[in-house]
Structures are given as C-alpha cells and as structure tokens.
Length: 345
Image (cartoon, rainbow, N blue to C red):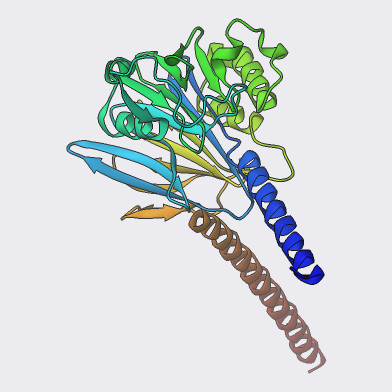
C-alpha cells in the first residue's frame, strides 16, 4: 500500500469516526422530553416534545371500534404521546440508564414473552382504559431495551399513574405516590425515595422545575396551571428545543397545544369532534376539521397567516382612516372657499 493510499485510508477512518460521534451525540441530545399527570379538582396529563429545531411532528386522530385515539408522531414515524377517549394517557421518551443491560439481556424468566417498550405504548394507547389493564397485560411479558432506550408513562382517570421501565431481572413499575407524577430522561426507580432537589441526572432540571410547580399549585390546579407547568418544564438547551407542548384534559377529551414554546398562542383539539381551533392569543378565530392529520408546521403557518391578515386589516383601516381624514380636510377647505365667496357677493 502506498503512502498516499494509507493517508487516504486514515482520513476515511477519521471521517467515519467523526460522523459516528456526531450521530451518537445527536441521539443523546434528541428526544429530551418530559411528561406528567396531575390529579387536582380535574385530571390533566402533559407532554413536552423536545427535538432539533425545524423538526416536525404530525397530529392524527384514529379510531378503534368506538374509541378514538389522539396520537402524535415525529417525521420519522415514531409516535411519542397520545390519549384515547376512554381517558388513558401514554407517553414514551428517551431514557438514559446508568446501567446498560444490552439489547437482549436475561429475562429472569424464559417463559415470559419479550416485548419492546414502544410496543407496550401502542398496545395500551389503542386498547386500554385503565392502569389495571396495562398491568394485567404486562403480567406475562418481559420488557427489553431495543436500540433506542425508552421508558413509558401511563395514566388514567381513576387517579392511577405509573412509569414503566426495564429492570435487570424484571419489569420495574414506579406508581404515583402523591397527587402528581413526573417523568424525565433519568431512570425513575434509581431515585426512589430521593428528595427531588437532590436528583442530578439527565433531565433533572426539567423534573425539578415541574415538581416545584406542582407542589405549589396542586391545591387549585386548572387548565392554565397545566399550561404553565409545561412552560416551566420546557427545554432551555441551545442545541434542541421544545417544539410541541400538549396538555390533555380527559374529562372533555380535549388537548391544548403550544407550538415552538409559544405559550401566548394555544390551540384546542376536540378528539371527539376531530377538530382543531384557536383557543387563546389569536386575532381572528380559526377552526378546521382534522380529516386525516395535521402537522405542527401547519399550525405555525396558520398562526403566521392569522397575524398577517390582522396586520393587513389594521393597515387597510389606517389607510382608509387617512383617506377619510384627507377627504374631510379637502371638503372643509372647499366649504370655506364657497362661504367666503358668498359673503363677498
């Protein structure tokens, strides 16, 4: 092998290693995300979806028998949150465990059927109405990690919520212990019994922000508090962003959405009616039917068009006012001239 070919080979290896590092770093940074369930006078579920800027997600309402399912998935087709009209909430986010059990770790019981976390998410969201049903389904299953390590949160309208994670020898379920439950990117069961402020792990900053907001507002937690809690937990990292915030209200089967961390403008989805409409912060009302699906980028465009049309109306009104004032001024001057001539004659 010549010197040049060796150099070229070394360069190729370096490039491949650099690209691999970039891809790995990208996987670590993406999908920060957080979710919660709060049980006050009403029940609210929340999910912040954090990803690279300009990435897109799609909202879809599907139907299974008489049940409708609100689901959101990214542009690669990965679903990550949703709620069905029976009141079951599901969210699926990246987990960064301190232990790596490998892709095919020991099940602890070879009789149990292996299943990935993403499949648990879909099975529950599209079929169940309660946490009891989720746990009954998992009795003969052993959840394993796939290439992407995930953990799930489930919540229902009966005051039950839990985080489901992969353990070394068994599935680990962390149930709600207070009137709220929060999930971020660290493994929840590692920190069982740890004061929330002492948690120092991936996504702990968002977890702590949400925890503090919940304990100070749980007494009168309402829709506005739910949106404010999502805002408190938004991702503040410069490399990736909270691109979509979803607040679920199971009693009404409605979902409230903020796009790109803009909590001044809120959209409202009726899962039952399959409609989305402007809820807060819009100059003109908007209401459309979700025929198949709608993207977050579509909502951004509708928001921008709403602002532009309002600006045009304001500009038109200003021009018309100026024109009317000019007409009045000219008319007034002409009247003065006529009156002056009449007096002279």
